[in-house]
Length: 404
Ligand SMILES: Cc1cc2nc3c(=O)[nH]c(=O)nc-3n(C[C@H](O)[C@H](O)[C@H](O)COP(=O)(O)OP(=O)(O)OC[C@H]3O[C@@H](n4cnc5c(N)ncnc54)[C@H](O)[C@@H]3O)c2cc1C
Image 1: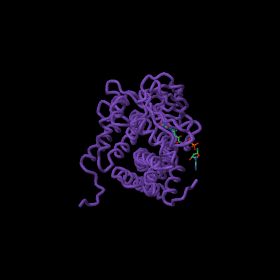
Image 2 (image 1 turned 90 degrees about the vertical axis):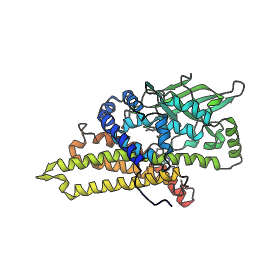
Image 3 (image 1 turned 180 degrees about the vertical axis):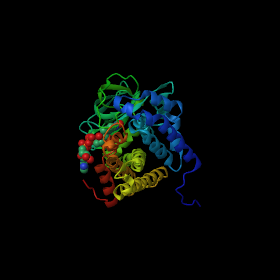
Image 4 (image 1 turned 60 degrees about the horizontal axis):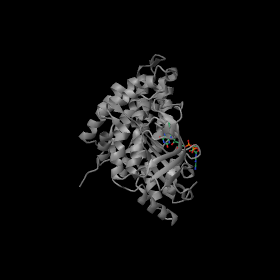
């Protein structure tokens, strides 16, 4: 009989402390510089690789935690350090998660190590699914993959948008429509190996936040990849397409589940940003004197901080619940994965905004990190499904009605 407990075990506490130390000593001090440079922070990625925080082994260890919390703990700490650098380090895990979700064991063995490279020469990977005309509406994807049977090759053409690490990645995982009439159920994911001709990235997009993280469009012009690059293999794809043609839904639901599973970890990133801003504002409010007393002695400031702390803790409970449910195969009957990312994302936006307010003019200038955290937080109501799309998932789940 396992008793209910929210205590972290020793391993989880050690992991949290270790990642926090790296975030405090290496990531946080570098945050402002890489934000201003708007460049991929390769030296920091390399540092992370050297200590074992960037690489397949680290990800496998966190995934192995039977409570599901380790990935959330490490995400929260790293992104507490800096979200732009955090994304530069953890962006690769999106592609790795896609390989894990759909790949065969052989494909994992072949491609996952290449996603990371090694400590002496780290690499990054990209997961490219969004398109200029297919953001929230994934089913309207225009990128096509056709099979050239004679050559046993897939030929992929199309354009991807906003891809994290797009164009600078060693390995690109690209989704494409194989049978457009089937909508999202006619899609498949492909690995595009390093150096494949026909794949090109745009120049890095200039962004509101997460500026250290590389985001770019990706153009695929008759990109030929070997048959073995279809994740899951051709036999499984053919069986899935046959089921979809008959109108059976199981696989579509499986894809939804994969998204639901990754959302708590993204929520944990948002929590890291929110916590950073809350802690900074709390200290500032104790030190800043106006009208002869620290500003925290005003209820309006102290209550705002109390609300910030409460909202962060509430969001964390939703994140941990969803992570635990996902890891232990509990069905998300009320869209709990989406709920966790939705709440954490909106808390990050609200808390960082409040933190700017508490710092007053100091919150608006770059001498303090709060303005950067405010800019960074906004992404969490947009990517990995916007807040509106998360609400759709929850609303459909609780009502059973196909709400639009
Ligand atoms: C920094 C960054 C990194 C990213 N990284 C990646 C990546 O690595 N890989 C990748 O594939 N993508 C990535 N994305 C893309 C991201 O996932 C999309 O931007 C996101 O899914 C939203 O799609 P969209 O931008 O086309 O917005 P749209 O879908 O055009 O939405 C515009 C607005 O309409 C709302 N809306 C749309 N449909 C509905 C509806 N049915 N009901 C109510 N409201 C609706 C949306 O919520 C939003 O407010 C990234 C984006 C950014 C900014």
